[in-house]
Image 1 (tube, rainbow, N blue to C red):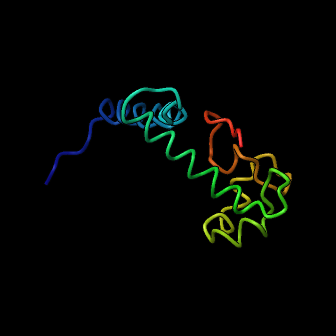
Image 2: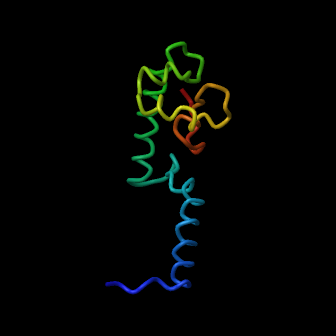
Amino acid sequence: MTPPMSRYAFSILATLLCSGAAQAQSIIPKLDQEGRKGDMARLAKEQAVAKFNAADTDKDGKLSKDEAGKTSPYLAENFDKRDTDKDGFLSWEEYVGHDRWPKDK
């Protein structure tokens, strides 16, 4: 049987876990980053742009719930959570979940 965690240890663990959530945005690699992380970021963005453009059937630069549902059951199920500005559409930033990769295409 393991001993119970002290309040001090629990406090430190809770602080670390909470700070990780606050830093989640910075985990997304920058596109100009060198090395493997940058290569992976550029590839991920390229694939995300292709999927977004394929889903955007009316080519208005945003995804309706219907467009999202035709290409991804996950997006359809989580549409309301991802639509952070509650305008009924997913912008590029809402689609990828961050604003570190501007959509050029």
